[in-house]
Image 1: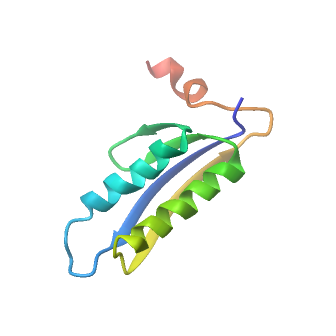
Image 2: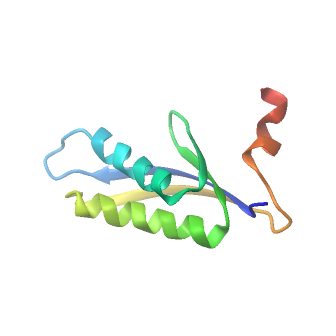
Length: 96
């Protein structure tokens, strides 16, 4: 079982004030391509996995934003680290 849940909202600054939606779509693609379990929500995306791997994915997301032309990137991150295991389902099952 995974030891962490990490939620991220990525906010890239574009060069000419253009829409960030293509950037956000690409950031989510980085997550999708990583193979970790994730859920997209209106204001953030939550990943489930090992903490070190999830931090690496966040780093890749930021690097990809710069590769796409972003001047800088703000990443708002929430981390739940639970060494004996945690899943998104455990936290949300009573609401489903």
